[in-house]
Image (cartoon, rainbow, N blue to C red):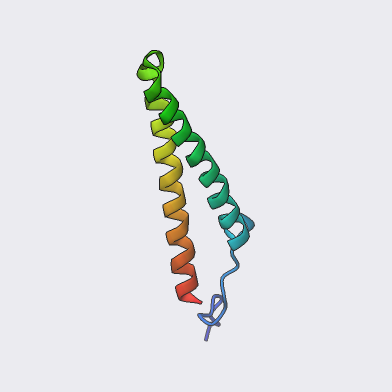
Length: 82
């Protein structure tokens, strides 16, 4: 009879880039980027010369917010499994 090489009672080892500390660090860094992008949107809407470039801070705001939400859900589901 062959032994199971991957028994179900072992906890999987999470890599360093998926650790809780790395996820919280990335969430806080993306929060700063989000605030920076919101400031860029405010400046771009206030000056008519920058109105054609509002897509860049808007995209930056969307992507950083999406990443924060995605990593927060990852942390939440991981905490539910422990």
